[in-house]
Image 1 (cartoon, rainbow, N blue to C red):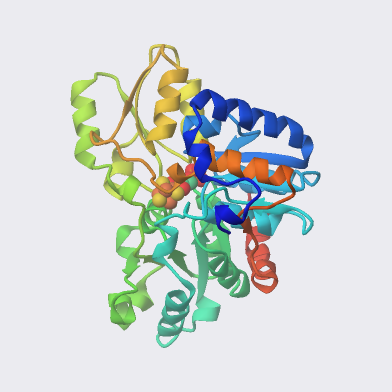
Image 2: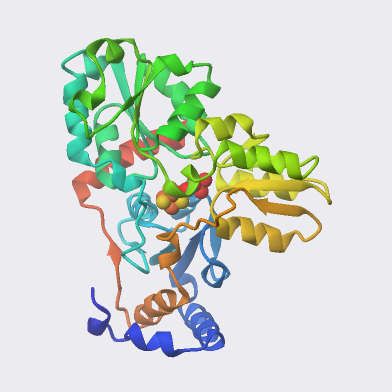
Length: 366
Ligand code: 13P
Ligand code: SF4
């Protein structure tokens, strides 16, 4: 929906000072009261994150989205797939809203339904795919891929429950097709004792994923060729550099980082876990963190008694998370006050039903 069609237009809000933006957002929030809840992912910029009623990693936010039945509106300060999950898991009378539709996830865009259907069919020419392979989609994916997993006996995982989900998957069938993040799949499977030799990468740009029939037959885990460009920027030599430069430094990274980086880290975890391990550490602790910059910066400011560094020497932000700015938040809220919903996220009912099957399986696992 274009801003010109809205009772409150977006463009003039860029003329406001930071103080005016803050006070108008707070005033609109107060007037909307419990009719609306703002969910904020940990990667949100500070100017927006401070207005979130509830914050969390993807798993926590998925649960929270289903636990606020009284809120008519769920304003999701995060990216598109997160707002889709909120829509799927919330009651039908609730509306999930993404303040800026351009807030996508480049990793989620690396797998789409036609490509996954094609892979499923191609793997199916080599093995009996329905009885042998459990499809698992990382939550960073479009709703139709979650529906695909719901339909084919699979489920969804997040960075905080991937290990439990993979354990569950191997109890169902002997192989896993994991999309779209190869790194989370590889790091988690390795942690469960699966060797790198038992994993192959399916490249959707190549015929048969670039794999031979024997490779497909022998693999335990088929990893999609997808990645997050923010996390793929962390390199093993960055870890070595900090270990050499800062004695007693500890390294914590998100499992979307590449295998060689995760192997060198002291701790791996979701955005929620990263916060928790750094907060729980003793005063004076030294940490280098491999995840999105806004989260690292927030922890740095929150804990001046600790030495906190960013793992990549070149600061790398999630540009799509950054799309949600205070202007879009204000625009969303003031339009809601006029009962005008900008950017509602509505997953088509049939797709939502199957995606809910996959998400409910995940929530039952952990
Ligand atoms: P979390 O589930 O750990 O918050 O991760 C989401 C994400 O997009 C990381 O890049
Ligand atoms: Fe997607 Fe990476 Fe941004 Fe997370 S950090 S939302 S995986 S692009």
